[in-house]
Amino acid sequence: MNRFALIAAQLSIAIIAIVFWQVASTTTLFGDPQKISFFFSTPLAVVKQIVAWFIEGSIWYHLWITFSEAILSFVIGALAAIVIGFWFARQPRLAAVFDPYIKGANALPRVVLAPIFTLWFGLGIWSKVALGFTLVFFIVFFNVYQGVREVGGSVLANARMLGMNERQLLRHVYLPSALSWVFSSLHTSVGFAVVGAVVGEYLGSAGGLGYLIQQAEGVFDVAGVFAGMFVLAAFVILIDWLVTVIERRLLIWRPGPGEAGK
Amino acid sequence: MPPLAMTDSVNRAGQPPAPQPPAAIRFDAVKISFSLPKGGVYDAVAATDLSLAEHEFVAIVGPTGCGKSTLLNAAAGLLKPAAGAVYAFGRPLNALNRDAGYLFQQDALMPWKTAIENVAIGLEVAGTPKREAQERARAWLAKVGLLPFAERYPHMLSGGQRKRVGLAQVLIRDPRVILMDEPFGPLDAQTRLIMGDLLLQLWSADRTAVLFVTHDLEEAIALADRVIIMSAGPAARIIGDYPISLPRPRDMAEIKLTAEFHDLHRAIWSVLKAEVLKGYAQSEHSSAEQAGA
Image 1 (cartoon, each protein chain N blue to C red):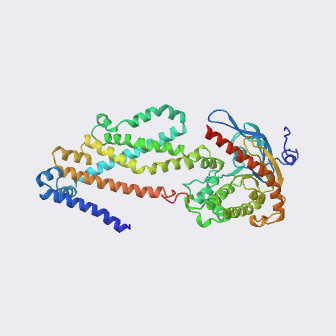
Image 2: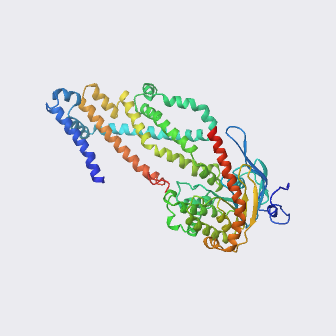
Image 3: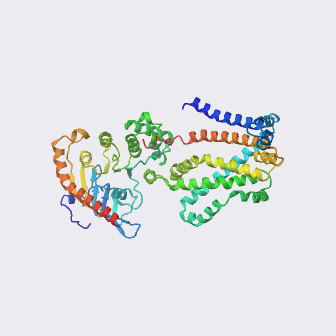
């Protein structure tokens, strides 16, 4: 399938869904349109709501809040995870001691922490950053840990025979290997940073996309809820595309799928 | 040094006469063992004496799994012998052998560095300024015929090209002794010939001491000054030591057609063949044991 046909096929899915939605919520073909539009709103109302948000400009404020929360929790979470992941991977005894605690903390559903973070850090962005941090940290941590420990034996032996000391091994061998694992999990970890931000906002905040959706739900404004969800979905697709661009740049040395081991 | 019961040709080497310059590598009754995961000890190499003179090209040939590579790792200082000692240029080896360059059997290039970065890294970590290291790396890539591929990452190169980069990576540091562990093992027959010629051509420039491990007897005879035959493991030992007096410079393909080559090959193969068969028998025996267990 060429690029054009692919985009056409992708668009046609959206068009079919929207037409079906519009028909169902405005005609009697599938039942009482008033009831259906109460539960599902209508595409027109959702589009009107989105356009209104962008025209009055309030959406930018909420987008910015969610974006900065996600970025902050990603950056802080990833940095902490890289440092601690490295430390643990190089100190197997330390890792063994902390192993049950790390696993236990990772098994905890992070949503239950949200009220505590609100208590500790207030209703502002930092309680959401904390929630996102707990999600991002473990993903990156496990990847760094794996990356450092999975450096190929012959690559390591070769680097040592080439005269590298411990510091140079860290810089030229361990760090690139660990970062490659971090980058390959970038989609997941950035996605979780956004989840942390939105869930945190949803549970208590004064701004952001999660707040917007929660406010609309509070007054049974179904059009507002759907509008919020669509903006959020577009936002996530945009961020995912950005991650793909960054990833392609950073992992240029990696064989693509299907061309490995030429 | 305790005299060892070996074929008499072995004793030609090994005994260090005092006035001569120290050997590049000398194994003095080196024994290598591994502790098995289930307990117990596996003796990979029995007490072995071997010395590699400066400017000498020695090939070690033996059946698969006979402990050739472990000997090489001991010479590199990556592995500590269970008994005996390794000497590098007269000094006992206690840590990594800083005089040695090691070309590994497996891919050992750093996949996140381009060809030229991989070649230059050995100089850079030794403190050579980055620009000078890059320039010398460029010259080395030209020597191994890979200049147009300088900016490629290892996965964009073929197996033979990766070996060339590996060769340049090792040789650029100008090691006093080169250790090679079946470096051309994974390559196809034609590429092996070409790599052999390249190695001989680069080697003839300064004739650094080389310890070359291979399972390919023809390759060993065509390359080396001396061919050492090891017995099948466990507790592998040296069972033959043959000087190769074929004239240099040699051509890997041409030399295999000469009568001298054939005579040498026949003489050494008669010894090696028995060991290879023994090696097969053992591995079949142990796999039968595993199947029974």
